[in-house]
Image 1 (cartoon, rainbow, N blue to C red):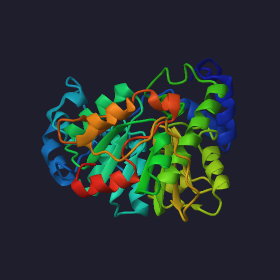
Image 2 (image 1 turned 180 degrees about the horizontal axis):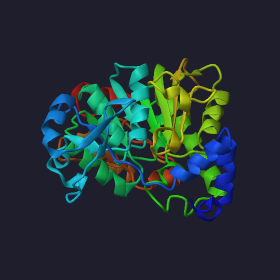
Image 3 (image 1 turned 30 degrees about the vertical axis):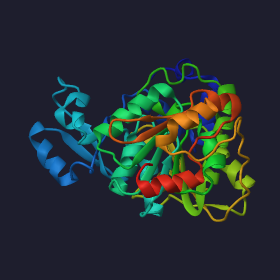
Amino acid sequence: MSDSSSLFPADFLNLMRQNLPDDASFEQFIAISQQPLRRSLRVNTLKISVADFLAQTAPYGWQLTPVPWCSEGFWISREDESLPLGSVAEHLSGLFYIQEASSMLPVTALFDAQPEVTAVMDMAAAPGSKTTQITARMNNQGLILANEFSASRVKVLHANISRCGVSNSALTHFDARVFGPALPEQFDAILLDAPCSGEGVMRKDADALKNWSLASTEEIAATQRDLLDSAFHALKPGGTLVYSTCTLNQIENQQVIAWLLQRYPDAVEVMPLDQLFEGAAQAATPEGYLHVFPQLFDSEGFFVARLRKTASVEPLPLRLTKSASCHSPTSAASWRAKSGRQRPLSLSNGMTRWSCGSAIKRSGCSPPPSHRCWVKYASHGLA
């Protein structure tokens, strides 16, 4: 095994030592972090059942090992790698999604708490693994708002949900901090798979820690707190909020959740995850979160927390540079003429994508669909 000090930043190693229970666990973490990540996939039940998928792929000689926390998930091993997994016909036709096993946890946690949902938001949705997983669990019923702030990743998100046969989604391109003020208490459930430092993906990406620093981690955590606050305000009382990251430090994980609990002590409660699946207890924290180090399940590193909103809270201020009114997609020209900021883009499968470019960063502008518009879109099937 290589000297860990030459492979990982010193501050990162110190954080991991603090997080892990003993030296043996730390050495196991360092060892597995230098090993290749095994591949996994999730069967897309919008297009095929798990049983039919297994029957269809049986002649290929794939070795499929069930993922214990996702009944549609499998680790895959193939003897013949001449054709990339992403190029096989079943993938191109949307019968399965190549998804890291750990990243299937947040959606499992969400639906374990709330099996029946009507309006869901995926606040940081690209590339679409969790959006498509949510939609499969909803069986394309109800509504899911799939938001992505990165313009380049919106195209990937759209490609994946189209390939997977998603028809109940609205794509939005916003800084997700706008949703709390603009759509207060409108969603039954919200997934915030937050942008993070990505410490957990080092087995897949050798450069994952190339630009890592303690200072950047603190900056990322500040953004995560803003996004979590926005998500909490957009959630209905009684609704479920799942917060997840693919990073391992407590600054971006436990401490972010602790901030929300301290901010709204009478309106939020933790829903423990130690019984989410057989074996979950070994990744459970004292607070009831899942802190998945890669050596526990031979996977990526991941963090998942599940919260319930128990009461309404004071609304966040709605900051606008220009007065906004309710507009449907058909009145896009009117909105654009009035504000010069946002425009909806019609997509090929009838979905609508709202976009505002960098205006949010400059001014804190809000998206055209106010909470009244969201209800209107739902009733007309436009969201």
